[in-house]
Length: 267
Length: 260
Ligand SMILES: Nc1ncnc2c1ncn2[C@@H]1O[C@H](COP(=O)(O)OP(=O)(O)OP(=O)(O)O)[C@@H](O)[C@H]1O
Ligand SMILES: [Mg+2]
Image (tube, rainbow over all chains, first blue to last red; front, side, top):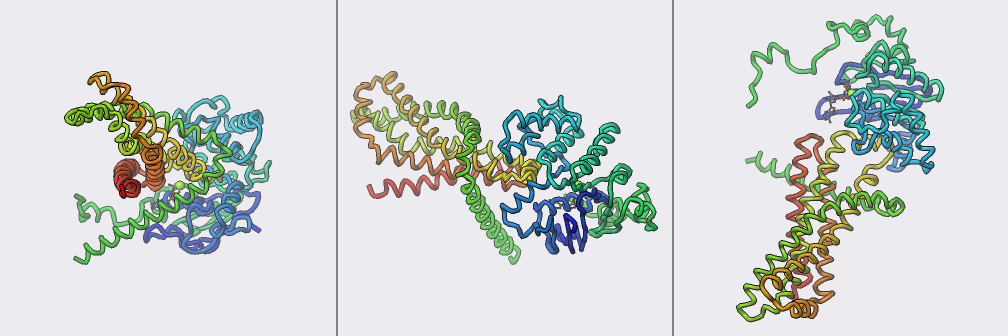
């Protein structure tokens, strides 16, 4: 049985359908990648899985529990077993790096401070920021902030982690380290990982299964090899990053020339 | 015409919706309060930033308000040869009315606006969502300690305000205008009733503290997560708090002193 089971998911923002009948299975112990053009709703999907947004139709089950019918305390109990790396990092800005990583441990356990310290330093070491522990979040670069957030997301050893763009803003060295780290954590700790990413090469390297989303639907799914061999033009364009093809680069709307010539001028 | 009615209706609905959300939030906050007594350090931190940081402005304002009361009161009383009663006038005005009201207005401007901005910013930078996903309920972890701190601080600040105000009145009355100090203090003590005056003033300040902190936290939590949204929410905190304080002051005064 898959860990996360999404069935017939519909979600609207105003009149715009972000998801229009999506089915996704995320299997235990595997790395599943969710890919798709910017603005298709990948971040939205993670928020739906985490129970922060409510689907308009359809169900999302995590570990056999329907996320959106749980009570407040059941939902929070479930979230303790899920880690999430936010696209923005979402670090607490008033406390330093060390305290940020220690935050979930201190909130959810009664471990003595010496043990908290060891745990935090271990996690920070694994993302290469042990010696940056006294910096405040405002003193970090975007890539560093995301690595701290990664360390924080795994401090409680969850059963599943959702990474929203973990590789953005990383130089090639930390990128390689992160890819490795995610892979290692998945294998060593038996984690289930969901990766949202645009970095096709890196993601294809570690993902066991890939879902390609666009226009509110799953366009293609399969292992990285299957996708690379896919006959669909759409998939080929996305996987190879070609500018021209069936994937639209622009937010949907009127034609550009038409807009320039005839569009209304706002006051 | 139809459009006007429609937008009026929409406005009315949105007001009620906000009121509803505000009360639900209050309920959630209150539910989180009991467990704070197990982690009182969270409240102490907030007492410091909400309460202690407001002390200076309360001290200075209280002193000046008391001094002005001393001057104005003396000028009126001296016409009736009753300047000995200056102490009573200063103390009653402060304890019954000006202490709770003015300190609540200052509290809304100093601490309330800061609370709204802080919470609103935490929301717009996804810190609150981040906490939710770490299975830490932001209402309990962030809002409840601030609420309790505001609720505790406000009566204390009002008490400080009144005490300093009385002292200011004394400085002006005795030091500047030469009212007899024995008469000033003894008349004040004789005519100020513990239940009628002091306790009623304390009740007012407790109510104001509750309402101002609630408004401030709700506005922050409900703010549109943009720079402009947070700015507007901060303004609303100050404006709505002022209305609530002055309106409630009338209601409470009518209830407490109406039949005299
Ligand atoms: N709060 C919101 N209100 C209205 N629309 C929103 C809101 N948040 C996101 N959207 C819309 O939902 C769509 C999906 O957003 P989402 O952030 O999930 O995209 P994404 O796939 O994560 O993109 P990216 O790869 O750039 O991070 C976007 O087109 C956006 O316009
Ligand atoms: Mg996104």
